[in-house]
Image (cartoon, rainbow, N blue to C red):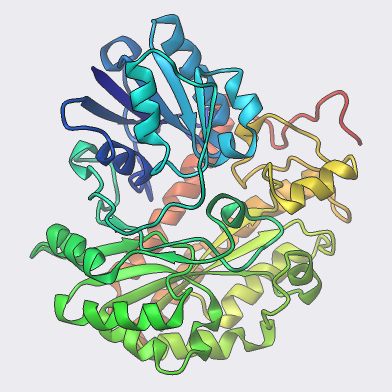
Length: 453
């Protein structure tokens, strides 16, 4: 028996470019592979870093994971595989949110996390009795998880391969986020000895092998657990980056401990400088006036900060783009990501905008947080799209990059990592704009005829 596991392209308009920037391996597929008996021939295909051939890569059973922006391509692949006689299973965040839709394109749909479901799917496949929809029975424990089959990932194309997951779930319930719906509102953690054993297995002597990326939505979700984990990381002498909430600064002793354990960077959802927008996002506990001091504190401990910002909230006006870039500069983030507010299926935001008749586009490939798919309140879709692109270009202008690199040099005497990071973002922006012009991709997704205007 052969099993093919596929991560589809995120954006069919842009396709696979020669410069695969910020590509991270899909950890979910190696986890599924690790849950598969050793006698099964397993292959992983990541369309975001490699071209592939349907006929050469096709398995008897095909598993496809899909976030919302990947869904149309996932359905396309499923159709081609079914034509060739394979059985197709769809899973991931989008099929979990819209299982009936996913079922139209596949033989089976997995709703929820795979650990408790996948063995059943394999058994049913072998007995020729696949069910249309499989639903998880409770949240799976993260204890005794097998080591993900990273050996099945491509040896090239990824920024780094040492990604690891410790937490699942999120206590927050941000209006635009689907994480809490998929993983739950409470935290589940892996046993720390198992985490350390996996890190020791992956760790090497080179800088690349010593660097780890924690994929958890909040690496400090449970303070007691995180403190114990960071203490155990100290003797390993690794370097790591992860995601956290800004309130990490308010946890006594946590930031110095993180720095001592090897933390050199955090991705933090700051979202907006506007308290009204933060209230819309259900993140009113954030205080924009405190951002600068808290980021300075992280800098004092050698931790770089990449801030995430969203434009397009109902309270946002056309000035939001300049305000966002200026605010990001003022609070001293080392890098920034700008996203267009996107109503993913299954979220509170989607229900709100759909109920108000403001969803303009249901082409899921446009739901990559870089295209306008709804009717904003105080900005036209065109202005929102233009402003989004402007914010990226302005923040990563040569002048602003030079300013950030100089600041980093004064703090850490280290130019190279941050400079490379900034230039990678510039290349990403330039590539996307060149491809958009070459393919004549419209600035704004075309509204559907029945959509409200």
